Image (cartoon, rainbow, N blue to C red; front, side, top):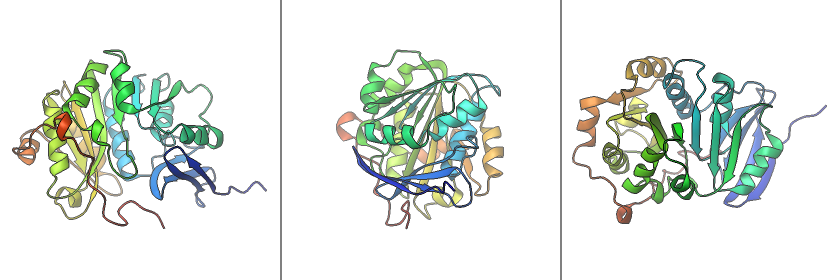
Length: 281
């Protein structure tokens, strides 16, 4: 018998652990310093376990007609859950993944190798620095899921960062990010004001309890120069095991209120999650 056993390794930015799922034969949970980072099922790469990841997947499903191959830039790598998902659902995608922790990339490559034929290139680099050197108009989708521990780093929250994201995206491209906040939503409102300076269309996806300020949680931000299919996103997210709500248009502008775009000198990380918000065990 080749029973899967947990793997633990000190990488460049923390202690990474790969823990097998007892209910799925070749599925693994990746944590870094106790915070869940990724879930991967090697036999079923289209399976998205985490709620926020499924919401990101819904966005990726609706940015273009089904099956169309896309050029995708991922800021934040983890165990490459979404690159695997796109390789399975949109064969032929060309994908770049930027992950600051080289040791984590090596751990994932060793224990959770990508399927043959996946056109995914991993880069060990800082997300902002790599973005600033990337070619203009080179991506159909930019996925940002970067957390230093359990916080979005400050240098990925400013107007300067949003400007670089807009530069790298093609005119019909879509930016999608995983953020985290709670009432009074100072961080989230600042991000909405920031991306509104560069993109005409904005939407957010989150559980109703998070949007009502009842608890800390993930919020998916979507930004584009073209209309976002919010009706289809609402239908898909409402059908999930943990339904979410899509906010856009006037309601989202009202939510943003008088928040100001984040200047470089004022940028701060996302809030510290309350104890136990994202941790395991």
